[in-house]
Image 1 (tube, rainbow, N blue to C red):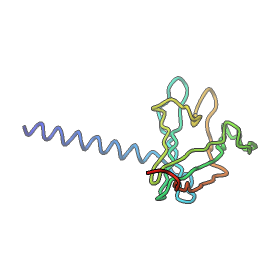
Image 2: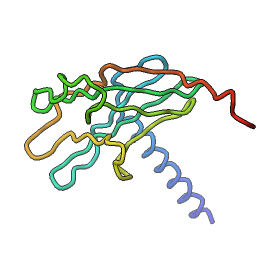
Image 3: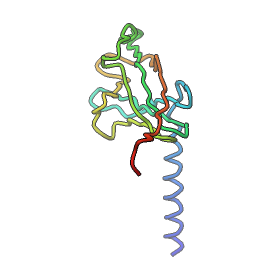
Image 4: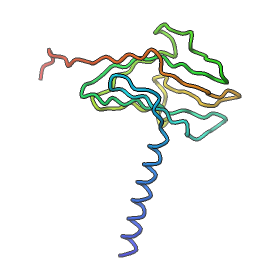
Length: 146
């Protein structure tokens, strides 16, 4: 019985420590109007490609719509810095619930086009920016029937 309790305690400790370590791999790149942008560059490489995880946290007490353009530098050259129009691959727009988060950690299919590779072929991501960030409060629909 003591061994089971000890083993259970050790498993809980190990799981908690792993979760804390996983959280610490994210670094904050910027924050605007209660919305913070984080990346995790320490994901495992597979097939010569290494993904970058993105986490966006809304600390507001209301839902927001967030827009931005990725500026991605590979081997020191920016691939998207001249792109400004919103109908391009690098422009992103999402909604995040109050006190919610958006996270793309590659555990699901990238239907939103959020995939960023830190490393692929002979290209290495040397810098990332969330540019032209816009945060808009989404007002509750007052005409909604309850």
